[in-house]
Amino acid sequence: MVEYKNKGNIEIIKVIKKMNYAEGVKNLAPKLNTNKGMLLVSNFEYPGRYTRWDIGFVNPPLQITVRKNCIFLDALNQRGEILVKFLGDEISKLDIITQMNSTERQYSCEIK
Image (tube, rainbow, N blue to C red; front, side, top):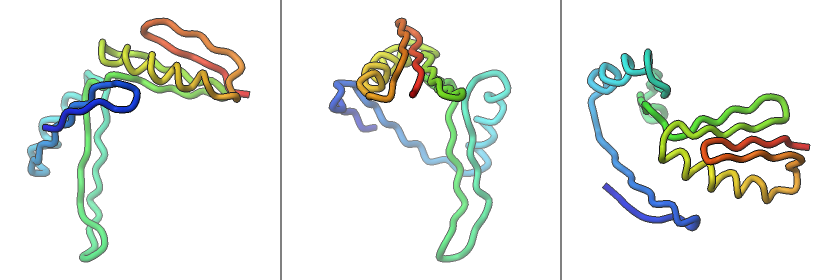
């Protein structure tokens, strides 16, 4: 486990757990039927060039949605509220933002 704070003073806790392919997909895939998350799987293998890999997560802290020229950040839990505030503040600094709305759990803006 690695813990640190980034430049925005957000505490980062990184945990990497190696699992065999069957065990990882077996545990994660069913959770995605009822929880938000993602599972990416590459079954393509070519010796010396490509290897098989899997990466996934469940119950993310933040949902990012983009529709036409609008960006929406929605906190899905308490950790997401911290990210909405931080990312919303950073996005609002951009000169391409024309409108912006913000609450504790959601940030939205329009882009020129």
